[in-house]
Image 1 (cartoon, one colour):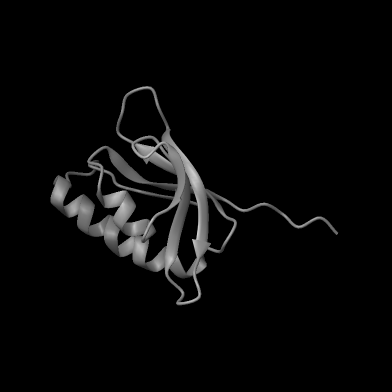
Image 2: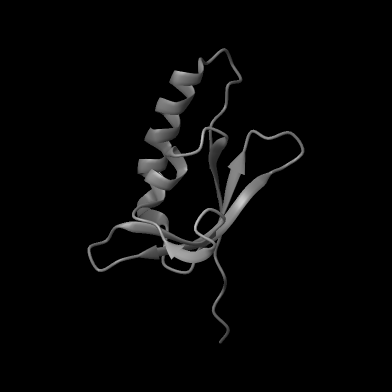
Length: 102
């Protein structure tokens, strides 16, 4: 699954961000604890600028477990959507789900 912003097709950045928010709201219920998240970026030459794991807490809030470069520790962010919105070069997410071994 890839969920991101696009300024193609004549969309303004604000229109792209609004549409991203709508897609993100649609995709969030599909994400599960343990899903691997790659944070996509607008930085040339990179597909993903950061990665972490999804964690859905007891209240159902989707959070991101990741290594913070600013805090120099592994942290559990308050909410995935909030984390994505804090950095202007974040454009979306790519998600991988590990398969259970039978």
